[in-house]
Length: 251
Length: 247
Image (cartoon, rainbow over the protein chains, first blue to last red):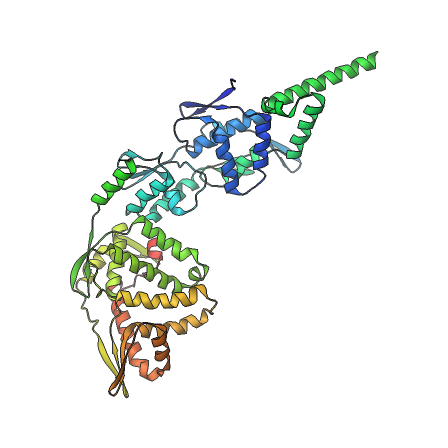
């Protein structure tokens, strides 16, 4: 079977992901019920597994992929209500290099944008930022392996922490009329991604019911259609019903 | 060989040692710089236990306990004779490898100059026999092993139990005496003071007047330790607490 591959432009490179079916998206929403950061991260990793890429993505690339995937399912628009007024934001703006790679050097080590949104300890965070030692790139290595390198070095950990803090302080953007502050280097970004991905499950169940009842689809068919495609089908049905109603009232 | 293994080998082979003066032996010794893992250990140990984080005395004892492990591991030819006066110089040397200057309470400390000056300080920390009435007490500067042993007795008592911390301050005095006292004699009879809770109970039986010369001796040694941590320019004493590696 040929799946539809959608491109995402990442800093001069293009990667592709296979779009999600309605059935898969519904399961994503189930996994995103939890607001526990590690549960959300696990779900985001599952989503990111769909990206066909032969190198490990850093958090900026992951963020851009996740926003692209989200937009392919729910569209580009994000809305919130403020004082009874609706504020809209085009999420595609987040794909225009709003977050940029930062790096710093300490002795023989170069530290760059990390691979993971969250870290269990200061040591793990420092290791995740570690990109190379004396020109040898170890960005792709496991965190545990990189921790071994850092632990063997006599670098001042507080200098690494303070450099990471500096990057964090300088890397935020404000969106939705300054109602939301996003920082790619802050683990709260995970909760933002959760928020834009998530959809009310009861709405999805209701939608599914309409599909099964009126479009005569079977449960297993939902694995082959995407959410936007099914919405189009439902729109066709609604339009058809309206036309029938109009014909009926005219005769 | 994997990239990581080759890097680890490279780091191992390129390790430089720090030369630092040990006052107790009047000579230089070699010590490996403090690793990132050891710095993390200091940060984690001090910040992971609420009792320790909220209590500067426990934090300092914990710091001294970790420092002991680090020194034992990093000093090339560790000698049991190394004591708490040496520790001051060793800790400053470890820090000076990371930062040659430290700012503490708006005062700048030039660690290299301090280490250089410390070679010239008159080392007066000798053992002594102190007499108070019928009782004579043999005292000496605690070795790092003894200091660590007694610190662990206090930490065991206060870190995990619900013993009120206000008792800690009064307890610390008697634990301090335990570190310094080697023997207590009354006439022909004497008892060697082991560094355990049984000896601690025995010391508690001694009255304050008898222990007074011991505390004077302890103060003299602590003052000597401070002289190794004094700033060159204004004599301010650099606090050798976990903050020196955390801030």
